[in-house]
Image (tube, rainbow, N blue to C red; front, side, top):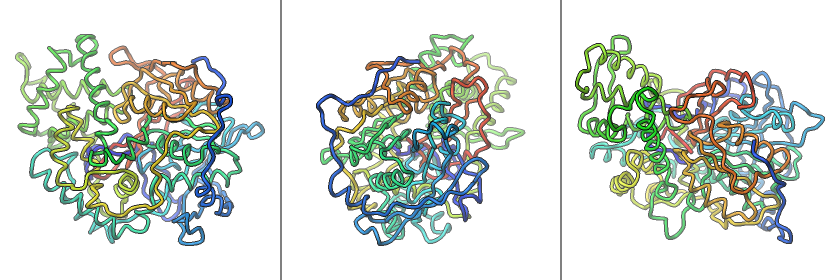
Length: 612
């Protein structure tokens, strides 16, 4: 999505990706984070001509003068610049939007291929951030041969920001009803709907004109102008999560300008955009992120039972049934207790589900899930024979775990935080949604019956997009077709147990673009790059040499639940994609001694804390 599930309130769980605040200048603060298969040549089908960029799109982007890039050294090893692009490509000399751009130069400039554009997802994720951290997770062959470039999409991060409120005070008042990971009770649902409606109306009025010019199509146009600015004839791109939607928009709007597009954690653009037949369904009923999350959780609990108590601490009776028992207990009554070191700890049903979803983004998150579940089982209604010392240990361990997951910021004060606007500005402008926000409780409940626990969490993330509330539109948004024949094959990467971008989306999206290839991965967490040398080497070979893995290739992730964590995977760090989409930064598996990631701000404010 990058749609984000409604799991993280202003003081709730952090996203696996991070969003940074925008200082006065892009060097004034350190960027916050996000975020050996055989190969065959990637050749277009013989005799199949490439589709061409439409005359309208060519006129829009090619009519913009090529920007001059005045790079300057920033943030130790990177280079930064800003670029002005048209707010409306139909009026190239009219109002402009400033974009922040960051580059990490190729290590082997003599053999440099060109520029690799990167995007972490979200919507709302910062391209500058993922580019800055490229040396910590991309493969050596990619870092040697490409300048890595990321830009913050219009409205987001260090680029010109969308602001739907005149002050933090007005914004905070509207956020009052969004202070739970997701609503469960009727009172919470009513407050949530009211605040979401106010948010949509504010972005449709005060947030204009930028809120109506943040569609993915506009960002694809910006990227084509930047492609020309860096001197590349065709685009080389690596996109994660919602970034895969951006890549597919580019491929269909500019099909003859593609060198190589690698898309990991895939969103089908038809599911994302919606059709006349699906316009009255909520976005996640099309994307089915909740189904992917439930599939991953259920498989973890089944494997826990199979592994037994020596490998899985939650293998007490039936883990699937016991997880459901904890959920029922917390829905009936939140758990509240005092910890001598960490103070009062409150755990609600929504906290339990949100924490589980956060941990599903990490390939090794299964361990935290079963540990949290065991402690909650002991504290909500301890099994026979549980002594006071065991409960005391469980209280402290649970408090410490939740303390580490939760966002501890005091609230939305200064400076103005536009992370939710950034997410909504893209999502609500791109996607079709039901008309009335008041119908969300019934729709969310229906989603939860289909995908237990996570249906509500994902469904509520887009309630502000109800079309009677979010009325601003981008007349130049792209709605298809999404089946153009590109000048080079596109590589899709799908993870079987992805909790945010359902594997089925990778399968269906890969069938849309003629000549594309699907690389599947039996791996865990959100996105697959970095989960095994098999996936990472295949993606790197495609980007560098334009070689596709053989059709039907399936890789296996290095980390498998309750089978041990290999040394190479230890110390992997999770970073965000807000507005989030969520991209997991993992040290490259080929590096024997992965570099330590810089400190990051793992706080993502806003009603929706996880992203695609």
